[in-house]
Length: 230
Image: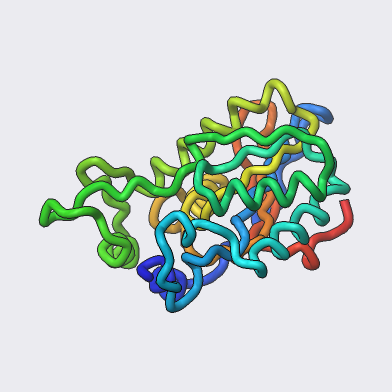
């Protein structure tokens, strides 16, 4: 699978962010970004299954999602936003079971990168995008979007929750490219510096939105047993 190829080409996991500037108490929105648990599409080689089955969590993926939920339970999130993809929605359900009776809402802006069309006019391919990123370019192909644009639409989605949930936290369940692009934006390095495929299944990253709506990266790509107590 091309996504598996992308994972092997990732340079490094996003580093932890520098401490954010102090914000007025009660003004910060904590955004816990969770990469979905292992899906059948993540296996290499991918099994010969229909596309809807490839978009399901493996037994290991369900365990990962449950562990992530238990790690987040003490942080008492107010909401779970999830990508429309099946593997993300299943992860969100596992997190909900572990964290209690909180709402889950599907958010279309958390969908994966819009690939668009290649130079030949066919569907965009991951290997072509990876070559562009490794060359230091973040293209906007016809009908598609750049990593920088992807990060911006994720920012818009979480900003929409800030007024309602400021002073608390929300969980965002998405994909490696979605989270990686947003983390790069929070680091002040939008676009090709996103390293979007290095996030581990079930990993947690934390970004805080201050009163001004600006994102600040607190930590990235930590598994549940690597988290400090809340």
